[in-house]
Length: 318
Image (cartoon, rainbow, N blue to C red):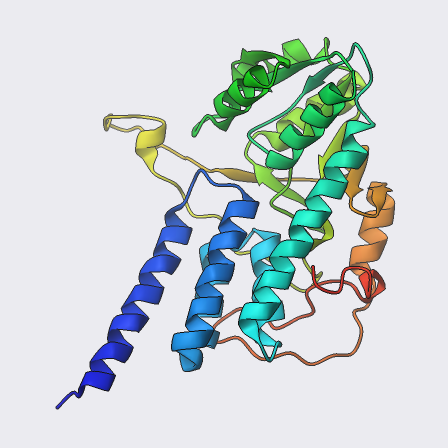
């Protein structure tokens, strides 16, 4: 016979799992919002169901396996004696880092330039607003970024900020790149293999490299993945995002993310400055410092959340 305490425990477990499912099914939010939701969930779980924390932590990583900030948040929370405090410090550090990345990026935008972006990035939006507020006049080309079309929101946000923006079809990227002087893209995660971001980023970077247009990736260190962690293959997304009705003999292959090789980009803008691909790769491949971490259940490996060389500067970030 179940008592009230058992029922309450099971209800809370169902509640936490439903929150994880919401994060898993979130297709539109960026890494910052997903990390905020994950931090709130970890804090609540540590308070009301601490025994379930390892399971919920593993489920969060599985829900957003290629979001570096979620991975690093979870690893930090698991080794902290006070999960709520650790999560809050991580979020504050992430916010400071994003502000610094935006500040550095604003300096890369020259007066009279045309910039191309991809998808929606709150850090890129902040950087372009800072450049505009600093007196620079420039325009921005925003591909629609199908299938979710976050580029429409990016163009609208820029326009409402008084920044001239052009919205184009994804298929027009190569044609319009000839007008651009700079490409700015965000990142969900960075590993020695490359940059995980919205699908189409790799093609944009490849086209820009062929045309000689520099590409800069905005990515604070909280999104750096350790060399031992390999995100699982992305599962196919809702086919109705591309094709509303079934068509005989037609299979819809709908992915939301791709991986851009580091050599396709000119630099990675971090809170510590702009790194070349070679510098970032060397940093990520360094042997991590000797440190043990709480084990996660399931397939997730409990490796360090960042290279040892980043500490103590990024102590609360990665």
